[in-house]
Length: 76
Image (cartoon, rainbow, N blue to C red; front, side, top):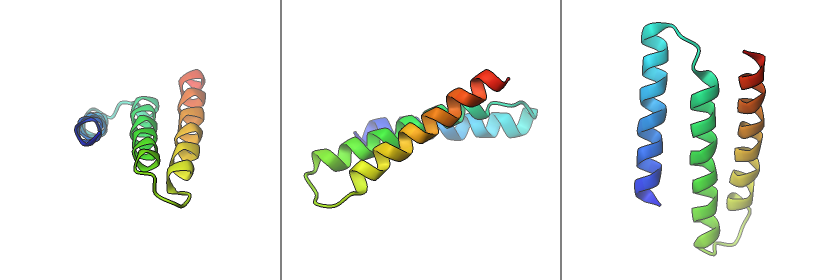
């Protein structure tokens, strides 16, 4: 899971950097990858069998970010 998080973080950083340098609107794309990263973090927390709500909250936030990302896809 750690390698997946590092790869997703690299993708997000590269998309944001490219978006800033070229002044293009890539927000839906990096929001989608941010949602995937939060989802992976939530699943990893649930697999650790930790008591609490951090894993469930991360998954809920990931679905909200997916919703916003899909909405931004259709607005363009």
